[in-house]
Image 1: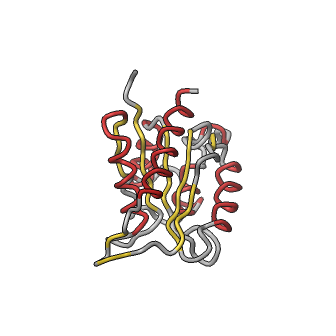
Image 2: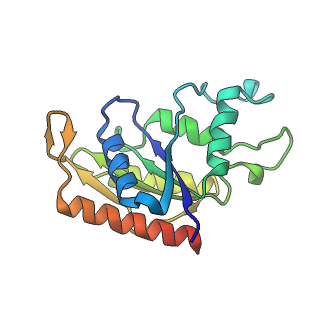
Length: 184
């Protein structure tokens, strides 16, 4: 079995984000079954068709990372019942054609396997999950919608999320299902 390349996307810019902590745990669960990298995308300019071609260097680097991955796993907080703007900007850039005049189906997002998880407040991310699903579908990603989960108001101690056995079990189920989904 070939090691799958999983690209983790953290939808929060906070240095010690709870979603980043969840992604780190997912990476530990995937262990040696996958090559895990975290996408660096803080240098992305705001999506603007006026600067789309030639493609900015930061955009090309992000597109290369997405293109090289076998699957993308997004971890994001819920902001006002939706996903963060910085994450939307990233998804907008990867959903655009790679060459001027080319169809949108040439975008690196097109056909790329994706799943998502969320650490949020009291809602558990349900509203943001609905909106994320709609967006990912619109940009033609292959969505693994089963086994996704949100963590509501997790226990935090000294800035670290307490990873209960239940959280670890759900995350392991999602990781295993995602590897299977990529292979399907």
